[in-house]
Amino acid sequence: MSESSAISGQDTIQESFAKRITALESENKSLSEELETTKVEREEVRAKLFESLIANKKYLRELERLKKENLLLKRMPLFLATVVEMGNDYVLLRQHGNNQEFITTAPAELMEKLEVNSRVAINNSLTIVRVLDHSLDARAKVMELVEAPDVSYEQVGGLESQIQEIRETVELPLTNPKIFEDIGIEPPRGVLLYGLPGTGKTMLAKAVAHESKATFIHMSGSELVHKFIGEGAQLVRDIFQMAREKAPSIIFIDEIDAVGSIRTHDGTTGSAEVNRTMMQLLAEMDGFRTRGDIKIIAATNRIDILDPALLRPGRFDRIIEIPMPSVEGRLKILQIHAGKMRKEPDVDLMEIAKITGEASG
Image 1 (tube, rainbow, N blue to C red):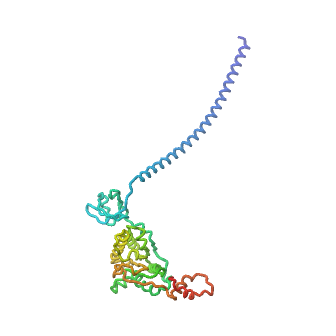
Image 2: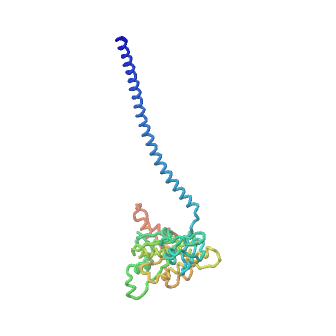
Image 3: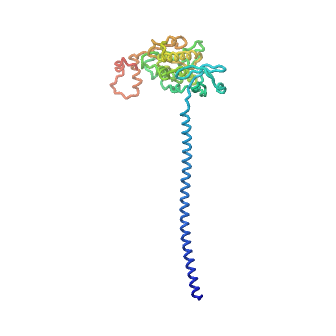
């Protein structure tokens, strides 16, 4: 082979290798770019996977919640009852709502927690499954409770003699009980205010609570009967228990004629409910033998229909009439309410008082 042919062959080989190297470099560059793209895509997939894992945990929690909710919806409801009487191996319960009484039992660990007046949860077979925490009836808490009413005697117009009387029978025993101890007499246990609507009975009760620095607990006789059918007696117990815990306190029973009217026995559920509530109220009042720091004030528009049992000594010992205001009383009321108003010079409050003879206040 000639020398020129050898050189030509070498050049061809070199060119071939050069082309091959160029192709490999191009392929390597392309693969590198694909690798970078794959890395980016991998990170995106990893981020999406992480988001999916978080979403999956969220859905699992929601699924668990729905399963529990489904079980609760399928579970038979429990009923409320109150322990009336207890023995070594039995419990007498009164179911809320229908007042049916029945005898049942409870596991030993629950029997240890039970006492008369305990509130319990029972199932369809009337078995005690839970003892509820000892607390006041939630309905008792929604009754008006004012730690320190902001109504003073100066804001009550036209009732000077009634104010003096209620101060002697309610305020003085709360603020200075030693006077009664020294004299050796027992102060009145309850005060009954009667008169037409709007004459100031509630305001007077709030004023004496303010001056006595006592908690004011306001309950309505009509709500007691009509809103909580079957549980009025329990609510009365809770109200008086609240009064003990908040002492010194004044329990104000408005519209007491709704529960304290002359008892009837017509066989209806409503009549029986009123009678039960009335009996519980009398029992609570009689049970306050030493309640020096708790006073009861009641109000009614119809004293003529009250049960005589309420008016016996030891219950409502003092009965105070709250009359329609006189001309002077109406003038005092107008002066109180118009005191901070801007008035024209020719406004004569006395003339207004004279022409408002039918106004109660």
